[in-house]
Length: 361
Ligand code: GDP
Image 1: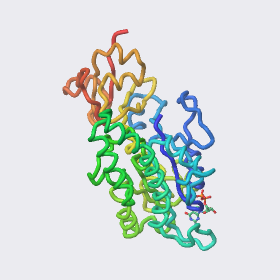
Image 2: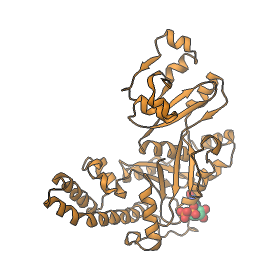
Image 3: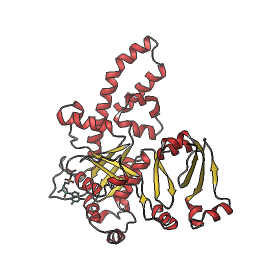
Image 4: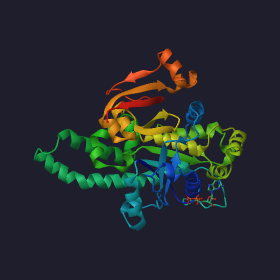
């Protein structure tokens, strides 16, 4: 499954946040695929629709989709020079599908900052520079062969051009993800290089808990990484939340003027930048969110439940979540009102689809 690698300088609150995340680890019984390694957190994708559906179809069993985080320790200045820890760090990042950078924005004189003072922009620069240098290395290693293949007409000139464009972007100190979001390069053109900075980035700013409602600060930090996604949380606050039962946690959030925990936000944003989406099934046995890739068709989506469903796909009976709730879960009413759609092989799954697949065995 796709993973999000958590990186950051030392003493920014990574472990505090990661420990809070893993306290939400999913129960293995519902996810047999999920062997949970110590540095892995597999957390439920928050979805307020699931309990609503469970009530309507009279089931207790709810199975959310999941988001997988991997704690990647050991970013140090000079990591790109590929020594010891640095090497391992880069290898771990290469395996992740998205990068979540935890950045310290909290002030605390008792906790030493590795660069001497709290400066989020500098910290991001330190990390991204290592990743950019490592990517440049990848390109410099690839280029001599590419030039040779170009002379031998074994590679498209347009590909070599794209690689050179990536090189100049990196040399200017910009990540490929940022350049792609600005429309300056198409990631697909250089996918073969597997560059680290071509992965989607999410920035998590660990802010003081009394700054969680400081919109001006948040806007300023968000602008510094835009158009990448920014999330604001306080790692210790998140850790405290995970100690509470649901009602107390909701109260603590409300007292802080928040609707959702930072970790829930992170899970949602992470799922989205990985290019994932869900569809729903709702029956007496269980209510479940199934994970698919954005843009998948109905047969591909069916295959997530069982490969037989994809092979023998006939059609999908689909009702939208909103229509299902409006009809209070009554299939009779849904049909009467013409809200049950029958979709075929080419149908592209939409968010909020509640599905029953029809298939041949
Ligand atoms: P890591 O090195 O990035 O994994 O950072 P840790 O999670 O170990 O945190 C380093 C230190 O900062 C620990 O003493 C934490 O208790 C403290 N810490 C973490 N988050 C916060 C925060 O939001 N505010 C304050 N004041 N201290 C924090």
